[in-house]
Image (tube, rainbow, N blue to C red; front, top):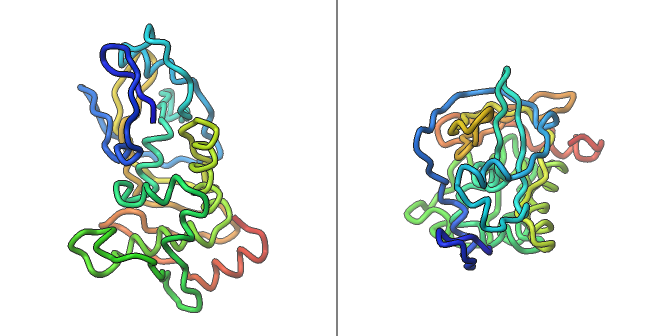
Length: 232
């Protein structure tokens, strides 16, 4: 990634640094439920103002999403959403930014009543001291492998990077999330997201695990059936 330094210069940084959250003073956290379909695109100009880099010739090379909560607008950078979805990002970033990256490290194992995955690398490569995959991990990456809109979301990160942008395509889902943000003028700039529940926007409702502490399972046999019928 090419970034702007405090002195106004440019330097290249490793993509793995994306897992480190942006820290700004005065942050507060709220929990909301939101439909990704209603998110809108926004410029990064308000982030530039907050970081005081508007005079350093920044470029709109990162996607920014605008989410309305009551009468308040929250701006979410693509990097923050990627960090929340692609966990643990510091371990899988090497797969995220290459074609067919998801398929290169995991394979969904169908035919069971719970999500299961085959992992094509050592468990310790993903979780250090863990030899067993956490249940939230198998649920998350089974979903990304089997549901079309989630699979497109994963692939969109690499596709955007190929055009010089840090961006992501949103999944067709209803999210319950905790937003950590700082106020800037009339909007709140989001620095961290924690997703607690993801509900698929289809004729069936499934709860999807995406945190270590709160999760439910959806059935892979239903995933297969819905994928064949074209449901996302």
